[in-house]
Length: 186
Length: 399
Image (cartoon, rainbow over all chains, first blue to last red; front, side, top):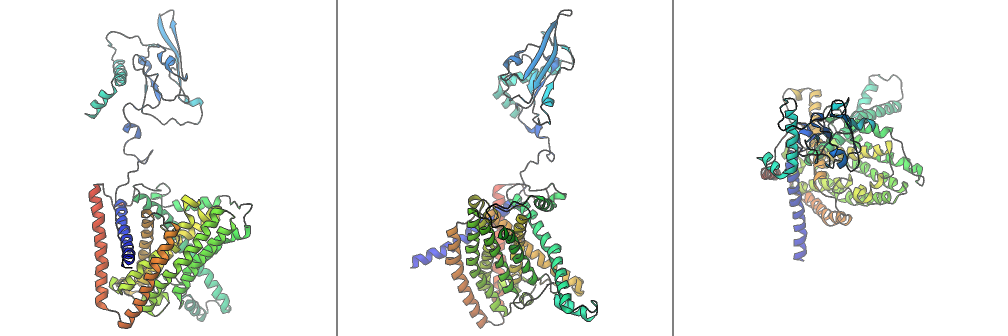
């Protein structure tokens, strides 16, 4: 009998005590700052700027350093890259007539940016790809035919140099991802 | 109060030669419209918004903050959306009862406001059995819920309706017994009469009148939570097992009515508690404002409203804290724990009133100290959890 009564009153006490403590925990949460990131319009910095440096977002091509080697077109498993590169007989230069990437098809595998010799085709942290029509998701990088980039031993064109440096850095990051990460942390 | 007001108007000849009954009808319609459209709908609507924001903050979220400044118009947008939605009535449902059910629920809820005090003058009718009337009217809600559950012709709805009936009928008993501990002290059932016997200071409130009313407050609170189908006793609409319980088949405006009642009931529950235990509209005398009748009534209205709304926030907070009980646990809580304690309280209060007919000042002061001591210990525990987590603290409700 005493045991039963004991259990009875302990149950009441336990209920009151645990509810009391639970309410204290939730009350402490009530005055904490919310952790919500209010994407897209009420963030302190753009969300794109907070992404990791090797984030595989929408593809971009730097035509200044594209050699027209077609390595990316061959690497693409779903043929979303279409390049039309021809040698101009008169100037003996590789001419890029067309460089299209169908972002609607792209699956962000990253296989195209790995074989690129200059880092011309690369992923950006940009990920907002939604659009109203499939046609507008086809990105045409060549507006009018341009000459492809010809690698030199030492690049001296001040316009191309920074772009090429960026491209080579991108490739280095592919080759040694862990070292880059350590560098970024330090 | 309305009747005296109308009688004085008739005596002044405002209504000309209109028969008295017609004047009363007009007065009732006007007062009803004023209370429903001026107060009940707005409070119920804003409460949905406040609940979502409070809940969000407890879960480290922000909550709705896009419609209007800080999302304050979210409830209007939700209401308009629901009003414009198509109403679907299931083919196999009992269409007439199905259509009627939300209105039974709403009537039971709004009728409670007839005897609900807002200040010493603002009350539609100060019935001499006010608290009994309110208890009876809020119980009418269960009839509507049962009708909704039956008429939907859906197993989830039916289970939800039956659960609501079982739960509300059970919890009515401890609720009534604890309410009657206060009635024993006051000797009146009138809402205004109960409030007039309390004072503005916590030591004059009935919660601190005797140890028995102190415990009675918590029993009433738990029982009214269960009657209002609130977490942790929201079994009739348990989402994880019954889809939405008795509202499963409802859509559009009728669904809106159920939710109006659900959130409006929060205010009714805390208004009952504030009236019975927490001093009602008794406001501290402030020199200049309390001198004029209007100023005093505004002060009393604000006091009553803020106390009641604190109760509403408390219920939201409980909803964000406690998990739903099982059906057998629900019944155990009621019949094995609340009911015996409520009986004990009832007898204890009767003895207390016999021994100390004028109240026992020392016990009141001591209980007030105990109450504030508990609050202080609570604040200490909150501070402990905050310190341990090392989280960033913000008291601003904005986001």
